[in-house]
Image (cartoon, rainbow, N blue to C red; front, side, top):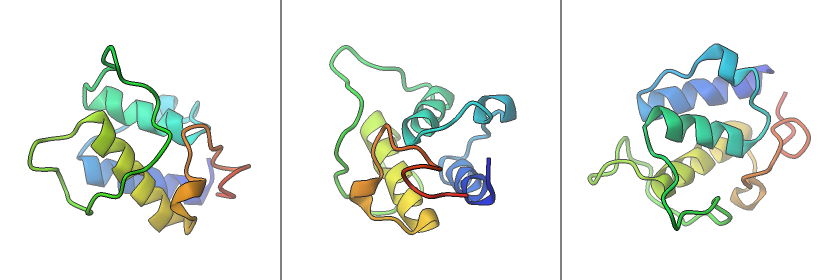
Length: 106
């Protein structure tokens, strides 16, 4: 995991007030992997009608939404953090986007 991804993970841990396990991060390759780790840590399992996110509705940057985190707001926040940290366009941050190959993170 390169420095860009390490800084991204730290930003996510701060934003969501969680700590992700190092051994799990070593297996992380895509934005979706990171998203799922965060959702797991926040105890936000898939519901019967929830699919993997494909688009990113813009939401304001907030520490915690007033109603609490849900899978949609977590995805939006992860995308915003990726855009900020990796200097990529929001449409480049897809669920299956590889940090190294697709987002050019070192």
